[in-house]
Length: 202
Image (cartoon, rainbow, N blue to C red):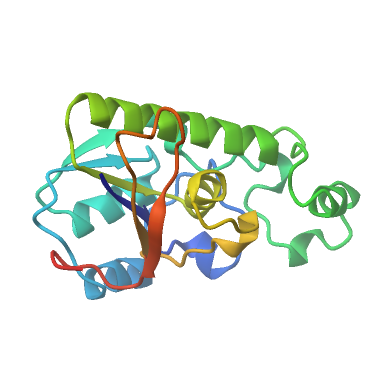
C-alpha cells in the first residue's frame, strides 16, 4: 500500500509561530497561494482528513476530485493554556517551561499530554490502515497536521528517528509504503521520502 501524509497549508497562527491545536483557523491568503503553487493531484479518489478547517481546505485544493472522509482523531494536539501563544509569549511561564523540559510529553494545563496525543494518533492510523487493507485499497492519503505526521512516523517508520526529527513544512508531505501482509504482525512504513511539490506522478 502507498501512503501519503500531508500537512495543511499555512495559517495566520503559523506565520506568528503560535501553538495552534484546537483553534480552527482557515488558511491565510499566503497559505492558499502556497498550497496552489506547490501542485495538485486530481487522480486521488479518497482522502482522509482532520476535521480542522486548515486541513479540509488544503485537501480540497490539493486533491480536487477526491472524496473527503473526516477523521476526528487525526486532529492536532490540544495545547490547553498554551493555545494561541508563542514560545516568546511564555518565556516567564513556569508551566510552559516545565512542559518543554519534559520534551512536551507531559500534559499541557487544560489540554492533552504529548504521550496521550501520540497514542491517539497512532491508534487512529492503525485503524485506518486495517480498514483500507480490508477493503483492498492500495492508497492511503491523509491531510492533517505536523504533530499528527511526526507521531505516525516516529511510531511506524522503519528508519528510527527522534520524534522531532520528522519535521514537515506547511503543504509538504511524506510518501511511504507498507506491506499489507505483515502489517498486523509487524506494522512498519518503508521507503519514507519527503516532498515539497505534489503532482499525479510524484
